[in-house]
Length: 231
Image (cartoon, rainbow, N blue to C red):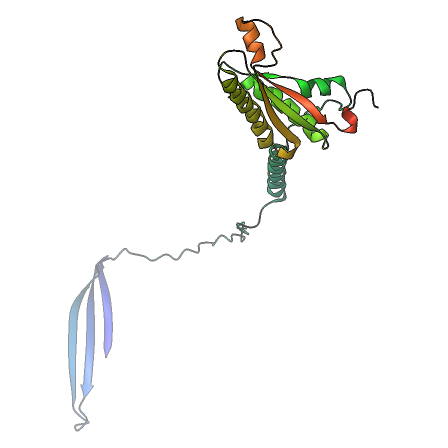
């Protein structure tokens, strides 16, 4: 076989093939043929270009993920400060307010214990002023564990003697109940009533009656520090 291709144009060429076949059984005979054809090209001008593209080498970047239980030193310090401030606030709220207790040997301590409280007409309920006076007595009580007192309830002269005796006792009992509620042992407090029998202000004026509606306080057993004149 012999072949040749002749270019006619950029997308066509003539192809000539010459073929000679020898017959196997007839060595002296052969079959010759000539083939002529036309070859067409769909993309005659298409060329393939190989381009080397350099690959950029990127250095690996270390990525650190912070675990929930892994905090910085600054954050740990901030948390410790917050916890310390919370404890300080909690402790300050749990501590009683700093109150200056009068010197037990002073005249002011004795005056505080003997200070009277007063009531409204025909009432045994404590007024805000009466509670404040009793609160001051509580401090002296706590500073003098051996001290005992007696509370004497009094009234003005209106109403019957029997009624006023009962009203005076209710007033003394109200003061004792308040002191006991503040932590004073009830065995350290006795109550009694004089009713209208021991007025401190004569007459029947409103001012005199207001002064007579009272609870008086007397020391029964004072601590050594409350004995006047004793160092």
